[in-house]
Length: 503
Image 1 (tube, one colour):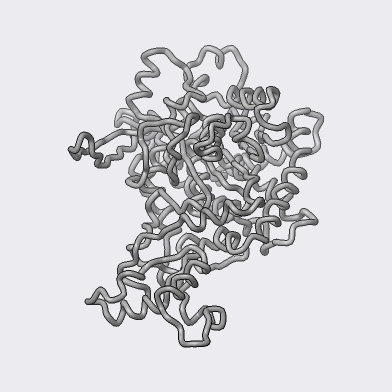
Image 2: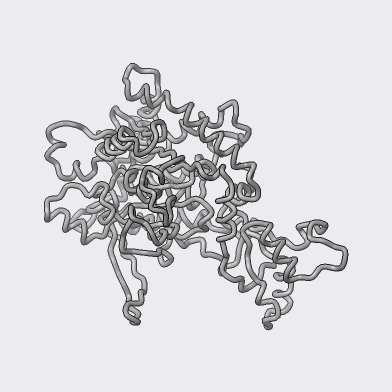
Protein backbone atom coordinates (compact mmCIF):
# COMPACT_ATOMS: atom_id res chain seq x y z
CA UNK A 1 0.00 0.00 0.00
CA UNK A 2 1.29 3.47 -0.83
CA UNK A 3 2.10 5.80 2.03
CA UNK A 4 -0.88 8.07 2.84
CA UNK A 5 1.00 11.34 3.16
CA UNK A 6 4.12 11.28 1.01
CA UNK A 7 6.31 14.34 0.98
CA UNK A 8 6.47 16.36 -2.26
CA UNK A 9 8.61 14.62 -4.84
CA UNK A 10 12.14 15.99 -5.10
CA UNK A 11 13.68 16.07 -8.59
CA UNK A 12 17.02 17.93 -8.30
CA UNK A 13 19.10 14.74 -8.05
CA UNK A 14 17.64 13.37 -11.26
CA UNK A 15 18.28 16.69 -13.00
CA UNK A 16 21.91 16.67 -11.83
CA UNK A 17 22.31 13.15 -13.17
CA UNK A 18 21.17 14.36 -16.60
CA UNK A 19 23.83 17.10 -16.66
CA UNK A 20 26.60 14.53 -16.12
CA UNK A 21 26.16 12.87 -19.50
CA UNK A 22 27.23 14.37 -22.83
CA UNK A 23 24.41 12.45 -24.54
CA UNK A 24 21.95 14.95 -23.04
CA UNK A 25 23.81 18.05 -24.25
CA UNK A 26 22.28 17.81 -27.71
CA UNK A 27 18.57 18.59 -27.46
CA UNK A 28 15.58 18.85 -29.77
CA UNK A 29 12.68 21.29 -29.79
CA UNK A 30 9.44 20.86 -31.73
CA UNK A 31 6.84 23.57 -32.40
CA UNK A 32 3.29 23.39 -33.75
CA UNK A 33 1.50 26.32 -35.41
CA UNK A 34 -2.08 27.24 -34.64
CA UNK A 35 -4.67 26.55 -37.29
CA UNK A 36 -7.84 25.03 -35.88
CA UNK A 37 -8.81 21.85 -37.70
CA UNK A 38 -5.79 22.31 -39.99
CA UNK A 39 -3.55 21.39 -37.05
CA UNK A 40 -4.22 17.77 -37.98
CA UNK A 41 -1.77 18.30 -40.84
CA UNK A 42 0.99 18.86 -38.27
CA UNK A 43 0.30 15.44 -36.77
CA UNK A 44 0.46 13.83 -40.21
CA UNK A 45 3.73 15.56 -41.06
CA UNK A 46 5.18 14.44 -37.74
CA UNK A 47 4.00 10.96 -38.69
CA UNK A 48 6.14 11.17 -41.85
CA UNK A 49 9.16 11.90 -39.65
CA UNK A 50 8.32 9.11 -37.19
CA UNK A 51 8.00 6.68 -40.13
CA UNK A 52 11.55 7.54 -41.19
CA UNK A 53 12.75 6.99 -37.62
CA UNK A 54 10.88 3.69 -37.38
CA UNK A 55 12.40 2.30 -40.58
CA UNK A 56 15.91 3.72 -40.14
CA UNK A 57 18.34 0.77 -40.32
CA UNK A 58 20.17 2.02 -37.19
CA UNK A 59 16.98 2.14 -35.11
CA UNK A 60 16.93 -0.67 -32.54
CA UNK A 61 13.70 0.31 -30.83
CA UNK A 62 10.61 -0.53 -32.83
CA UNK A 63 7.19 -1.00 -31.22
CA UNK A 64 4.39 -2.81 -33.05
CA UNK A 65 3.62 0.05 -35.45
CA UNK A 66 4.58 3.66 -36.11
CA UNK A 67 1.41 4.71 -34.27
CA UNK A 68 2.82 3.13 -31.09
CA UNK A 69 5.85 5.43 -31.07
CA UNK A 70 6.11 8.08 -28.37
CA UNK A 71 7.45 11.46 -29.61
CA UNK A 72 8.37 12.38 -26.01
CA UNK A 73 11.25 9.92 -26.36
CA UNK A 74 12.76 12.00 -29.17
CA UNK A 75 12.03 15.65 -28.27
CA UNK A 76 13.02 17.57 -25.15
CA UNK A 77 10.82 20.65 -25.67
CA UNK A 78 7.28 20.91 -27.04
CA UNK A 79 5.69 24.29 -27.87
CA UNK A 80 2.46 25.21 -29.60
CA UNK A 81 -0.17 27.83 -30.24
CA UNK A 82 -3.93 27.23 -30.22
CA UNK A 83 -4.62 23.69 -31.45
CA UNK A 84 -0.86 23.42 -31.85
CA UNK A 85 -0.72 24.01 -28.11
CA UNK A 86 -3.11 21.11 -27.60
CA UNK A 87 -0.79 18.90 -29.64
CA UNK A 88 2.24 20.03 -27.61
CA UNK A 89 0.46 19.17 -24.37
CA UNK A 90 -0.75 15.82 -25.70
CA UNK A 91 2.77 14.71 -26.57
CA UNK A 92 4.89 16.45 -23.95
CA UNK A 93 2.67 16.59 -20.85
CA UNK A 94 0.19 13.76 -21.41
CA UNK A 95 2.87 11.66 -23.15
CA UNK A 96 0.58 10.27 -25.84
CA UNK A 97 1.76 7.98 -28.59
CA UNK A 98 1.40 9.17 -32.17
CA UNK A 99 -1.68 7.01 -32.72
CA UNK A 100 -3.32 8.13 -29.49
CA UNK A 101 -2.80 11.78 -30.41
CA UNK A 102 -4.27 11.36 -33.90
CA UNK A 103 -7.36 9.64 -32.57
CA UNK A 104 -7.76 12.21 -29.81
CA UNK A 105 -7.46 15.07 -32.32
CA UNK A 106 -10.00 13.52 -34.67
CA UNK A 107 -12.47 13.05 -31.82
CA UNK A 108 -11.76 16.56 -30.55
CA UNK A 109 -12.31 18.14 -33.98
CA UNK A 110 -15.58 16.32 -34.60
CA UNK A 111 -16.79 17.12 -31.09
CA UNK A 112 -15.97 20.83 -31.35
CA UNK A 113 -16.58 21.84 -34.96
CA UNK A 114 -19.52 19.65 -35.96
CA UNK A 115 -22.39 21.64 -37.46
CA UNK A 116 -24.66 20.93 -34.50
CA UNK A 117 -22.20 22.66 -32.17
CA UNK A 118 -22.50 25.99 -33.96
CA UNK A 119 -24.46 28.64 -32.10
CA UNK A 120 -25.88 32.07 -32.82
CA UNK A 121 -23.00 34.58 -32.87
CA UNK A 122 -25.23 37.02 -31.01
CA UNK A 123 -24.53 34.86 -27.95
CA UNK A 124 -20.95 36.12 -28.02
CA UNK A 125 -19.06 33.31 -29.75
CA UNK A 126 -19.48 31.22 -32.88
CA UNK A 127 -19.06 27.83 -31.20
CA UNK A 128 -20.34 26.36 -27.98
CA UNK A 129 -17.74 27.15 -25.32
CA UNK A 130 -19.13 24.64 -22.83
CA UNK A 131 -18.60 21.94 -25.43
CA UNK A 132 -14.96 23.03 -25.82
CA UNK A 133 -14.46 22.83 -22.06
CA UNK A 134 -16.08 19.39 -21.84
CA UNK A 135 -14.03 17.96 -24.71
CA UNK A 136 -10.76 19.26 -23.23
CA UNK A 137 -11.64 17.92 -19.80
CA UNK A 138 -12.46 14.52 -21.30
CA UNK A 139 -9.18 14.52 -23.20
CA UNK A 140 -7.11 15.23 -20.08
CA UNK A 141 -9.08 13.03 -17.69
CA UNK A 142 -8.58 10.05 -19.96
CA UNK A 143 -4.82 10.27 -19.45
CA UNK A 144 -4.76 10.46 -15.66
CA UNK A 145 -3.44 7.80 -13.28
CA UNK A 146 -5.68 4.81 -12.98
CA UNK A 147 -5.48 2.88 -9.69
CA UNK A 148 -7.15 -0.12 -11.34
CA UNK A 149 -4.13 -0.83 -13.55
CA UNK A 150 -1.78 -1.11 -10.58
CA UNK A 151 0.15 2.01 -11.51
CA UNK A 152 -1.99 4.56 -9.70
CA UNK A 153 -0.61 7.05 -7.20
CA UNK A 154 -2.34 8.68 -4.23
CA UNK A 155 -3.88 12.09 -4.71
CA UNK A 156 -1.13 13.69 -2.62
CA UNK A 157 1.47 12.88 -5.28
CA UNK A 158 1.92 15.74 -7.76
CA UNK A 159 -1.61 16.20 -9.04
CA UNK A 160 -1.86 14.90 -12.57
CA UNK A 161 -4.12 17.75 -13.59
CA UNK A 162 -1.57 20.40 -12.63
CA UNK A 163 0.29 21.98 -15.53
CA UNK A 164 3.76 21.81 -13.89
CA UNK A 165 5.58 18.52 -14.42
CA UNK A 166 8.87 17.01 -13.20
CA UNK A 167 11.76 19.15 -14.53
CA UNK A 168 13.77 16.14 -15.66
CA UNK A 169 11.06 15.16 -18.16
CA UNK A 170 9.88 16.94 -21.32
CA UNK A 171 9.26 20.66 -21.06
CA UNK A 172 6.07 22.05 -22.60
CA UNK A 173 4.88 25.59 -23.26
CA UNK A 174 1.70 26.91 -24.89
CA UNK A 175 1.27 30.46 -26.17
CA UNK A 176 -1.59 32.69 -25.08
CA UNK A 177 -2.43 36.40 -24.69
CA UNK A 178 -4.26 38.41 -22.11
CA UNK A 179 -7.62 39.38 -23.54
CA UNK A 180 -7.07 43.03 -22.61
CA UNK A 181 -3.89 43.05 -24.70
CA UNK A 182 -5.74 41.77 -27.74
CA UNK A 183 -8.23 44.64 -27.70
CA UNK A 184 -5.41 47.11 -27.19
CA UNK A 185 -3.70 45.56 -30.21
CA UNK A 186 -6.75 46.15 -32.39
CA UNK A 187 -7.32 49.72 -31.20
CA UNK A 188 -3.71 50.66 -31.91
CA UNK A 189 -3.92 49.08 -35.39
CA UNK A 190 -0.90 46.89 -34.63
CA UNK A 191 -1.13 43.80 -36.78
CA UNK A 192 1.39 41.51 -35.11
CA UNK A 193 3.27 41.00 -31.88
CA UNK A 194 5.20 38.19 -33.51
CA UNK A 195 8.45 37.58 -31.68
CA UNK A 196 7.98 40.18 -28.95
CA UNK A 197 8.47 38.33 -25.66
CA UNK A 198 6.67 40.87 -23.51
CA UNK A 199 3.47 40.46 -25.52
CA UNK A 200 2.97 36.72 -25.99
CA UNK A 201 2.76 34.70 -22.78
CA UNK A 202 3.82 31.11 -22.37
CA UNK A 203 2.05 28.85 -19.90
CA UNK A 204 4.81 26.45 -18.87
CA UNK A 205 5.21 23.06 -17.22
CA UNK A 206 8.52 24.33 -15.75
CA UNK A 207 10.06 27.34 -14.04
CA UNK A 208 12.31 29.84 -15.78
CA UNK A 209 15.79 30.42 -14.33
CA UNK A 210 16.39 33.65 -12.45
CA UNK A 211 18.48 34.95 -15.34
CA UNK A 212 16.32 34.76 -18.48
CA UNK A 213 17.05 37.70 -20.78
CA UNK A 214 15.21 36.22 -23.74
CA UNK A 215 11.92 35.26 -22.12
CA UNK A 216 9.92 37.52 -19.85
CA UNK A 217 6.29 37.61 -18.88
CA UNK A 218 4.53 38.70 -15.70
CA UNK A 219 2.92 35.38 -14.79
CA UNK A 220 5.92 33.86 -13.03
CA UNK A 221 5.41 30.33 -11.73
CA UNK A 222 2.42 28.40 -13.01
CA UNK A 223 1.80 26.07 -10.08
CA UNK A 224 -1.77 27.34 -9.88
CA UNK A 225 -2.66 26.48 -13.49
CA UNK A 226 -4.09 23.14 -14.59
CA UNK A 227 -3.59 21.34 -17.87
CA UNK A 228 -7.23 21.96 -18.72
CA UNK A 229 -6.87 25.70 -18.18
CA UNK A 230 -3.75 25.84 -20.33
CA UNK A 231 -5.54 23.94 -23.12
CA UNK A 232 -8.53 26.29 -22.98
CA UNK A 233 -6.44 29.46 -22.76
CA UNK A 234 -4.27 28.74 -25.81
CA UNK A 235 -7.28 27.67 -27.94
CA UNK A 236 -9.86 30.33 -26.95
CA UNK A 237 -9.92 32.09 -30.32
CA UNK A 238 -11.73 35.48 -30.19
CA UNK A 239 -15.27 35.31 -31.69
CA UNK A 240 -14.94 31.49 -31.85
CA UNK A 241 -14.86 30.73 -28.10
CA UNK A 242 -15.13 32.63 -24.84
CA UNK A 243 -11.88 33.69 -23.11
CA UNK A 244 -10.49 31.43 -20.39
CA UNK A 245 -10.44 33.02 -16.95
CA UNK A 246 -7.65 32.01 -14.56
CA UNK A 247 -7.29 33.29 -11.04
CA UNK A 248 -4.75 32.70 -8.27
CA UNK A 249 -3.51 34.31 -5.08
CA UNK A 250 -0.34 36.40 -4.79
CA UNK A 251 1.36 38.15 -1.89
CA UNK A 252 2.24 41.77 -2.56
CA UNK A 253 3.81 43.93 0.17
CA UNK A 254 2.82 41.35 2.74
CA UNK A 255 -0.83 41.37 1.65
CA UNK A 256 -2.42 38.37 -0.05
CA UNK A 257 -4.68 39.23 -2.96
CA UNK A 258 -6.59 37.43 -5.67
CA UNK A 259 -5.32 37.98 -9.22
CA UNK A 260 -7.64 37.26 -12.11
CA UNK A 261 -6.98 37.42 -15.86
CA UNK A 262 -8.79 36.34 -19.02
CA UNK A 263 -6.71 34.63 -21.69
CA UNK A 264 -7.29 34.06 -25.40
CA UNK A 265 -5.84 32.10 -28.29
CA UNK A 266 -2.11 32.75 -28.79
CA UNK A 267 -2.68 32.79 -32.55
CA UNK A 268 -3.81 36.43 -32.47
CA UNK A 269 -0.15 37.47 -32.58
CA UNK A 270 2.09 34.41 -32.38
CA UNK A 271 0.46 31.80 -34.56
CA UNK A 272 3.89 30.35 -35.30
CA UNK A 273 5.54 29.99 -31.87
CA UNK A 274 8.98 28.92 -33.12
CA UNK A 275 10.86 32.21 -32.66
CA UNK A 276 9.32 32.85 -29.26
CA UNK A 277 9.98 29.26 -28.17
CA UNK A 278 13.58 29.31 -29.41
CA UNK A 279 14.39 32.32 -27.23
CA UNK A 280 12.67 30.65 -24.29
CA UNK A 281 14.78 27.52 -24.69
CA UNK A 282 17.92 29.65 -24.95
CA UNK A 283 17.09 31.11 -21.54
CA UNK A 284 16.75 27.59 -20.15
CA UNK A 285 19.93 26.28 -21.76
CA UNK A 286 22.24 29.08 -20.74
CA UNK A 287 20.90 29.51 -17.20
CA UNK A 288 22.92 32.22 -15.46
CA UNK A 289 25.67 32.23 -18.09
CA UNK A 290 25.56 35.35 -20.21
CA UNK A 291 26.65 33.45 -23.27
CA UNK A 292 24.32 34.88 -25.89
CA UNK A 293 21.86 33.26 -28.26
CA UNK A 294 24.53 31.66 -30.45
CA UNK A 295 26.22 29.77 -27.65
CA UNK A 296 22.90 28.82 -26.03
CA UNK A 297 21.71 27.38 -29.37
CA UNK A 298 24.71 25.08 -29.78
CA UNK A 299 23.55 21.48 -30.20
CA UNK A 300 19.86 22.47 -30.37
CA UNK A 301 17.78 21.02 -33.22
CA UNK A 302 14.57 22.91 -33.99
CA UNK A 303 11.67 21.26 -35.82
CA UNK A 304 8.62 23.34 -36.76
CA UNK A 305 5.30 22.21 -38.24
CA UNK A 306 2.97 24.60 -40.08
CA UNK A 307 -0.71 24.58 -40.97
CA UNK A 308 -0.55 26.02 -44.47
CA UNK A 309 1.37 28.81 -46.19
CA UNK A 310 -0.60 32.10 -46.19
CA UNK A 311 -1.76 33.49 -49.51
CA UNK A 312 0.16 36.42 -51.00
CA UNK A 313 -2.91 37.90 -52.64
CA UNK A 314 -3.58 41.64 -52.39
CA UNK A 315 -6.40 40.96 -49.93
CA UNK A 316 -4.02 39.28 -47.52
CA UNK A 317 -1.64 42.24 -47.57
CA UNK A 318 -4.27 44.61 -46.22
CA UNK A 319 -6.16 42.27 -43.90
CA UNK A 320 -5.23 42.82 -40.22
CA UNK A 321 -6.58 39.37 -39.34
CA UNK A 322 -4.49 37.60 -41.98
CA UNK A 323 -1.39 39.53 -40.90
CA UNK A 324 -1.95 38.58 -37.28
CA UNK A 325 -2.28 34.91 -38.23
CA UNK A 326 0.72 34.98 -40.57
CA UNK A 327 3.19 32.21 -39.80
CA UNK A 328 5.53 32.67 -42.74
CA UNK A 329 7.09 35.84 -41.34
CA UNK A 330 8.38 33.95 -38.31
CA UNK A 331 9.77 31.22 -40.56
CA UNK A 332 11.63 33.86 -42.57
CA UNK A 333 13.06 35.31 -39.35
CA UNK A 334 14.29 31.87 -38.32
CA UNK A 335 15.89 31.37 -41.72
CA UNK A 336 17.57 34.75 -41.32
CA UNK A 337 19.06 33.53 -38.02
CA UNK A 338 20.50 30.58 -39.91
CA UNK A 339 21.94 32.90 -42.55
CA UNK A 340 23.52 35.05 -39.83
CA UNK A 341 24.91 31.85 -38.24
CA UNK A 342 23.21 32.50 -34.92
CA UNK A 343 22.61 28.78 -35.01
CA UNK A 344 24.17 26.19 -37.26
CA UNK A 345 22.91 25.35 -40.71
CA UNK A 346 21.10 22.04 -40.72
CA UNK A 347 19.64 22.50 -37.23
CA UNK A 348 16.38 24.23 -38.22
CA UNK A 349 13.67 22.31 -40.08
CA UNK A 350 10.31 23.65 -41.23
CA UNK A 351 7.55 21.37 -42.54
CA UNK A 352 4.44 22.82 -44.14
CA UNK A 353 1.81 22.12 -46.80
CA UNK A 354 2.13 24.52 -49.69
CA UNK A 355 -1.02 23.74 -51.68
CA UNK A 356 -4.63 23.89 -50.59
CA UNK A 357 -4.39 23.78 -46.81
CA UNK A 358 -4.28 27.57 -46.41
CA UNK A 359 -7.70 27.82 -48.11
CA UNK A 360 -9.40 25.45 -45.69
CA UNK A 361 -11.45 27.24 -43.00
CA UNK A 362 -9.96 26.68 -39.57
CA UNK A 363 -13.29 25.63 -38.09
CA UNK A 364 -14.59 23.49 -40.95
CA UNK A 365 -15.43 19.88 -40.16
CA UNK A 366 -17.38 17.35 -42.19
CA UNK A 367 -17.29 13.57 -41.80
CA UNK A 368 -17.70 12.85 -45.50
CA UNK A 369 -20.95 10.93 -45.16
CA UNK A 370 -22.94 13.34 -47.35
CA UNK A 371 -20.87 13.25 -50.52
CA UNK A 372 -17.53 15.08 -50.74
CA UNK A 373 -14.50 13.69 -48.86
CA UNK A 374 -14.51 14.56 -45.16
CA UNK A 375 -12.17 17.13 -43.61
CA UNK A 376 -9.78 14.57 -42.11
CA UNK A 377 -9.56 12.66 -45.39
CA UNK A 378 -8.95 15.88 -47.34
CA UNK A 379 -6.09 16.93 -45.04
CA UNK A 380 -4.50 13.47 -45.36
CA UNK A 381 -4.55 13.81 -49.15
CA UNK A 382 -2.97 17.28 -48.99
CA UNK A 383 -0.15 16.08 -46.74
CA UNK A 384 0.50 12.99 -48.88
CA UNK A 385 0.65 15.18 -51.99
CA UNK A 386 3.16 17.52 -50.30
CA UNK A 387 5.55 14.59 -49.72
CA UNK A 388 5.24 13.08 -53.16
CA UNK A 389 8.06 13.34 -55.67
CA UNK A 390 7.32 16.69 -57.36
CA UNK A 391 9.40 19.37 -59.02
CA UNK A 392 8.49 22.00 -56.43
CA UNK A 393 11.80 23.06 -54.80
CA UNK A 394 10.26 23.71 -51.38
CA UNK A 395 8.56 20.32 -51.23
CA UNK A 396 11.69 18.62 -52.56
CA UNK A 397 13.80 20.19 -49.80
CA UNK A 398 11.23 19.13 -47.19
CA UNK A 399 11.29 15.52 -48.37
CA UNK A 400 15.06 15.38 -48.68
CA UNK A 401 15.72 16.55 -45.12
CA UNK A 402 13.58 13.82 -43.51
CA UNK A 403 16.13 10.95 -43.59
CA UNK A 404 18.95 13.06 -42.12
CA UNK A 405 16.76 14.45 -39.36
CA UNK A 406 15.42 10.98 -38.55
CA UNK A 407 18.95 9.57 -38.35
CA UNK A 408 19.98 12.33 -35.94
CA UNK A 409 17.04 11.60 -33.64
CA UNK A 410 17.74 7.86 -33.79
CA UNK A 411 21.37 8.44 -32.83
CA UNK A 412 20.37 10.80 -30.00
CA UNK A 413 18.07 8.17 -28.55
CA UNK A 414 20.70 5.45 -28.93
CA UNK A 415 23.28 7.57 -27.06
CA UNK A 416 20.83 8.31 -24.26
CA UNK A 417 19.84 4.68 -23.73
CA UNK A 418 23.39 4.12 -22.47
CA UNK A 419 22.96 6.65 -19.65
CA UNK A 420 21.18 4.69 -16.96
CA UNK A 421 19.18 5.39 -14.86
CA UNK A 422 18.31 8.62 -16.70
CA UNK A 423 16.95 6.86 -19.78
CA UNK A 424 14.64 4.61 -17.76
CA UNK A 425 13.33 7.69 -15.99
CA UNK A 426 12.55 9.49 -19.26
CA UNK A 427 11.16 6.42 -20.98
CA UNK A 428 8.77 5.23 -18.28
CA UNK A 429 8.39 8.31 -16.01
CA UNK A 430 8.94 5.98 -13.08
CA UNK A 431 8.61 7.00 -9.45
CA UNK A 432 9.96 4.82 -6.64
CA UNK A 433 8.53 4.55 -3.14
CA UNK A 434 10.08 2.85 -0.13
CA UNK A 435 8.07 -0.31 0.56
CA UNK A 436 9.33 -0.45 4.15
CA UNK A 437 8.05 3.07 4.86
CA UNK A 438 4.79 2.43 3.05
CA UNK A 439 4.11 -0.72 5.10
CA UNK A 440 5.02 1.04 8.34
CA UNK A 441 2.76 3.96 7.53
CA UNK A 442 -0.10 1.61 6.75
CA UNK A 443 0.32 -0.13 10.09
CA UNK A 444 0.91 3.05 12.09
CA UNK A 445 -1.34 5.54 10.32
CA UNK A 446 -2.04 7.45 13.54
CA UNK A 447 1.59 7.98 14.49
CA UNK A 448 4.50 9.95 13.07
CA UNK A 449 7.05 7.19 13.61
CA UNK A 450 7.94 6.96 9.93
CA UNK A 451 6.95 10.41 8.77
CA UNK A 452 10.57 11.43 8.16
CA UNK A 453 11.02 8.94 5.33
CA UNK A 454 7.63 8.84 3.65
CA UNK A 455 8.76 10.18 0.27
CA UNK A 456 9.14 9.38 -3.39
CA UNK A 457 12.29 9.02 -5.48
CA UNK A 458 12.83 9.61 -9.17
CA UNK A 459 15.69 7.12 -9.66
CA UNK A 460 16.36 3.80 -7.96
CA UNK A 461 19.79 4.96 -6.73
CA UNK A 462 18.10 7.61 -4.55
CA UNK A 463 15.86 4.97 -3.01
CA UNK A 464 18.82 2.67 -2.33
CA UNK A 465 20.62 5.48 -0.53
CA UNK A 466 17.49 6.14 1.54
CA UNK A 467 17.27 2.47 2.57
CA UNK A 468 20.92 2.39 3.59
CA UNK A 469 20.58 5.51 5.73
CA UNK A 470 17.12 5.05 7.28
CA UNK A 471 16.72 1.26 7.52
CA UNK A 472 19.82 -0.43 9.02
CA UNK A 473 20.54 -3.77 7.38
CA UNK A 474 21.64 -6.93 9.21
CA UNK A 475 25.37 -7.41 9.51
CA UNK A 476 26.98 -8.73 6.36
CA UNK A 477 24.02 -7.80 4.15
CA UNK A 478 24.29 -5.02 1.55
CA UNK A 479 21.59 -3.28 -0.44
CA UNK A 480 22.83 -4.89 -3.66
CA UNK A 481 22.09 -8.36 -2.28
CA UNK A 482 18.45 -7.55 -1.55
CA UNK A 483 15.85 -8.03 -4.34
CA UNK A 484 14.45 -4.65 -5.32
CA UNK A 485 10.91 -5.90 -4.85
CA UNK A 486 11.64 -6.15 -1.11
CA UNK A 487 11.98 -2.38 -0.71
CA UNK A 488 10.74 -0.75 -3.92
CA UNK A 489 7.23 0.17 -5.06
CA UNK A 490 7.27 1.35 -8.67
CA UNK A 491 4.68 3.84 -9.95
CA UNK A 492 4.05 5.05 -13.49
CA UNK A 493 1.78 8.07 -12.93
CA UNK A 494 2.59 9.86 -16.18
CA UNK A 495 2.62 6.90 -18.55
CA UNK A 496 -0.32 5.78 -20.65
CA UNK A 497 -2.66 3.37 -18.99
CA UNK A 498 -1.80 -0.27 -18.65
CA UNK A 499 1.53 -0.07 -20.48
CA UNK A 500 5.15 0.06 -19.52
CA UNK A 501 8.15 0.71 -21.82
CA UNK A 502 10.31 0.17 -23.61
CA UNK A 503 8.56 2.27 -26.24
